[in-house]
Image (cartoon, rainbow, N blue to C red; front, side, top):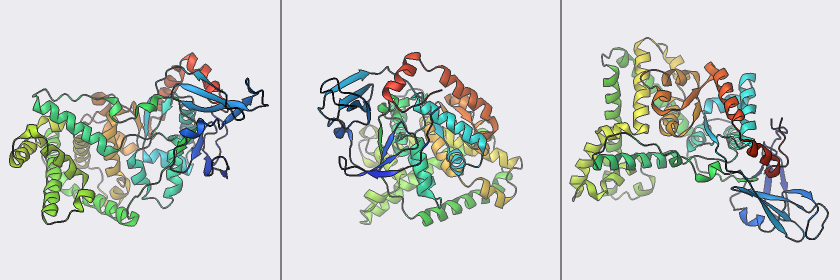
Length: 438
């Protein structure tokens, strides 16, 4: 277990000339600014002085500078003598932490979640597990009143690891689905795990993480739009209750609605551009950009009109439907329809409260789930994802956990701990001198 979960403490150093903050993991250091610190390692800024230098014999001037990929760089702060110690290759399990879990841990109100969080932090420190954050975490966090504190907590928990933004993952899915469609291959969607992760995610972690701020728009406006969207969803429940469609028909309806959404976004993009609104090139909806990229594909036809018609056919094809972002999303909505038809969410006010994060949840699950080994979600979403309609684990192999099966989560974490190779355990104190194990 990792000990010494310190709060962020700011300090300054003349050698660095910027603000440094110790992270919540005392085996790492957080750098809260946007410049690269890899170059400083070559100057033998010793992060962990351990012993006398074997070259100049300086007293306690030699020690760990940083960890780079699969080796530890050691150096002397006096004579700049350096050495490297190789580290074994590792493979980390990938766990996505839903906003609800992170929020509960942040509030510290439920001991069960705090216990699980400590185990997760321990396995991350042992380089056996990684819990990267996403742009959806950032977007959703900024709807909170204490968003800065929560986001700092999320990034510290992720130890600086971040998944590829959702729009890049979706674009890759579009490209792969289109290639299958153009070559008339079966719509069996291949999953390349590295689409969602940087290659370095399975490297040994360095001591420094760099936190770069971002722009999140008008928070109050976004918060109001979120409430309006959830209210609009709940208002459709009366129509759903009176519907007679089968589950398969509901899925088809959702996919057709998604296709219309992409096309309408593109048509709006074209109209604004034709009217001389060139700001749309930078601020237009991302859904329009997916279609615009499709229509630039020469294999779809010689003329723009031919390519537009081909794009429309693709968006109504089984290949588009096989994209994880489309398939999973459509199935979640179809499963929600079934719940509503069976009498769930009859109280509109309670439904709005219970589904407040629904759109964010659907977004991150439909995009990222196939790429992660496991996800922690809230109870309501867990119930949807386990239905036969969605069957996320059966279709994509992603393990699912929530407050309803914390024992299974504990067992999964134990499996990960027990599977850590002995050479990795032996290398941990070499790479991270402050790390305490038990």
